[in-house]
Length: 415
Ligand code: 2NL
Image 1 (spheres, helix red, strand yellow):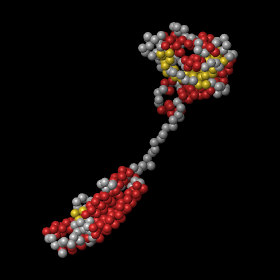
Image 2 (cartoon, rainbow, N blue to C red):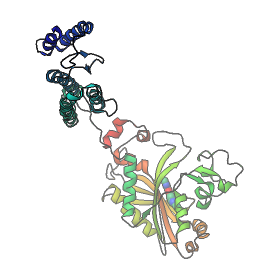
Image 3 (cartoon, rainbow, N blue to C red):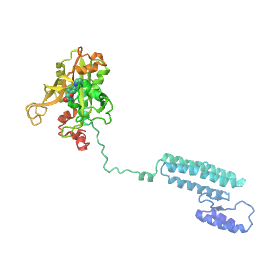
Image 4 (cartoon, rainbow, N blue to C red):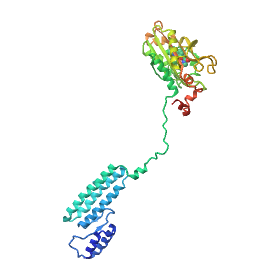
């Protein structure tokens, strides 16, 4: 029985698995021509139907040990190469997948064709193999990425880091907030309103008579295509924040104490101190018996709070359409303390804001919606200041355009 010797050779450890398959196949080819084996017991033929899961046609202990060891080695080989979650999931499907997994294939190929007396031994080995593969999967799931995957995403901690820039308030925003907080501390509320306004709120109710130069399109940026509307409804970019103060008076009766910070627009040519877009803080105080002394005291306090308690103020007659009387306010030079220097053109004083007692004509517009603004019963003062001008003085900035250029070398100095 030459093929039996051959079979035992095959089962021995002297040859590699592949050599043994080859030897067995050769022996089988020879055996087929002789039909001397009808015992159907130890005939060993392992044929590579599939590259990895062979068909099993011998069912003795040694053949089963060998076949199951092969499959287990394959599973261990696969598990050792896993790198990353996707590969682990692919391993699970390949080995434990309920439809096309390899364990399913092992059971289908081997168990199905096994003779009844071999089924028990085969089943026991199969039942032992399954937890081994499941254990490999569990280990891969818990193990995290393998060394190769870790090396691939390793970070060179000796490289210089990326420095994150510290954010900071823009100097205009900071100045605007500083001014509003000075007045907030005096009990003023803070209001905001639209930048696109009507001619009525920007000019008419602020007592700009028809033909006043400030209405001229030279100064005002208007929205195009408004010609068919009545003059008062035509849209424009607000040239000051006063419209918000009028809207506030229309919506609430006196007393009113309010500051309006915001962006305003004028059709000005840009130069070192002018920009067509700039910022303003305007204030309004209305109550019974508000006097010019209240105005002077309030603004003197505000300038001391903004520039230091040594600062003095003085008031000069001026003109605004919406106040009567009106005044320009100067502060003692914050650079030389009033002695005279280049900044104050040797005068010792710097002009900083405008103010005045609210014109009765302005109150009359408010009184159309809120009768409480009857100029015979109440009075009030208002003031307005340019934020850029104050920021330029506070921070020693000589060109207004620096605020809008977005140059980090400039802005970084405020971080
Ligand atoms: C300046 C001067 C000023 C006002 C603004 C105002 C507002 C209302 C009524 C009356 Cl609702 N007046 N605002 C008053 C005087 C001066 O601004 O030089 N601004 C940059």
